[in-house]
Amino acid sequence: MEPQIRAQAGLQPQSTLRRLLSALAVQSYLPNPNDTRYLALDLSQFNTLSLATVSQVTNPVVRSLMIRIGGSATVKDTKFPVFWPLAKELGIPHDIYMYNWPGWTVDQHIRNFMDSVGQHCDGDLGNIIWVDAECHADKTKRQVSDNTYGVVEAIGRETGKPVGVYSGLWFINGYMEIQDWMSDTKWWLAQWISDQHMEHPGPPQTISAIPQENILWHQTGSRCQASIYNGTGYVDTDRWCLSENKYKEIYDIVEEEEPIPADWWPTYSQINERVLSIEGRLAEIENRVGRHLQA
Image 1 (cartoon, one colour):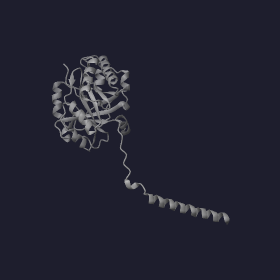
Image 2: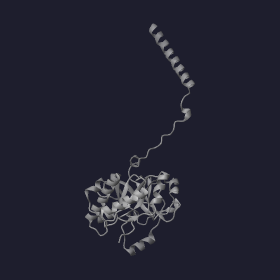
Image 3: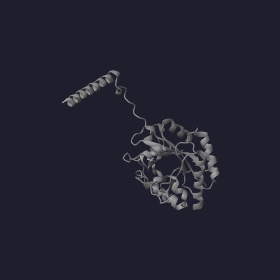
Image 4: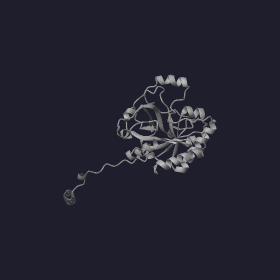
């Protein structure tokens, strides 16, 4: 049976009993204002909050959003048609993410994805498209990796956009075959603190096949109090792993230059006065030189 997947790969799934016991100890947190990494939120139909409030909170500022469009062969996220255009209207950089279910073929994934894009994106595909890989569907490691790469490659071919992979180290090590494509791919890796009393400080754990410079985002937790954004329940938090300049490059951020004050430009009379002053000084220098030569 295919579950309703949302980016939740920060902790390895547990048995039902252990999950119930762990839930009793799980806490919640607010975004760490002392974490200098850029903050992002990832959203789906499971989240309730106000993007208008998100755009107004300043400590820390939410720099980006990853918004779930759906996934697999049939799932369409019911809140994508709400969150996506509003993020654009508010000027918040935004990425699409969709989840991969290896039990379906690559073509089935792409048909569903492109149908949703055609219905709701109006030509705006954001900056990066993310493929959520956290389900094995009882397939072999090779089948999971082949299917994931097939979806990544097909989405890139169909959209012309860069495509990255969301996952957690436990899933990569436990359910995926390490393949060459992984070292050339952008990654968004999840790693949380077990009781979620705070964001994970990072950096997320990785493997040699995934170099640190290819890890763009770190999902730091899933229990951020949505009340800070005029919402209910919780929301996932993410932190940028690379430099500020790299963020601006990838997300095409152009900083506006401060306008030159109107009174900065000199008036004609001020220019004329300056010219006369310079001419006077030049004449004085010429006189001095002449007297020196005659002596």
